[in-house]
Length: 197
Image (cartoon, rainbow, N blue to C red; front, side, top):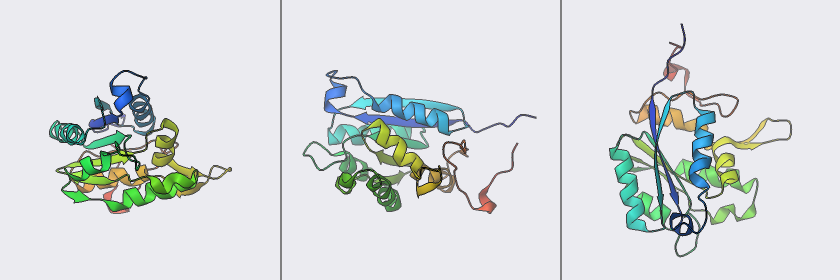
């Protein structure tokens, strides 16, 4: 009998004034789609948004994606200290709970690569039954943040944040997310692991 996996709806939001106005090609949405497609065993439906760095517009998009049934919403861009970087403020404005561990770990991972990681203001929050996570703007940094930093022998140097995402989504009432361990191994306590079906 083949395994069956819960279907999951994921919101992906690329926040960029220039990409949203067509000045250059958006790289955030393809990077998020590609990584999630490799990392998850679940069938995924993506809900996509490409929007400018406007706080009210970002908050509105997040609310719409949660209301549309996205168990997970990932944003990319707008998390630095520049005047137009308002993604964290827009995210916190729609939060029911803050999840500070995600931002702390994202900065730890990025510090393994660049000293400017301390300038990042990424946050993660829960709204209703959805987890919303702000990710960096660069495709390479998105993958590093989700997967973590590895040593030259392939062993884990700093855990990626996605290892904690499936169990977090369990706890807030979302679908059972299963990962491809060669990309990222989702972690759950033994009592929360569902037997293969």
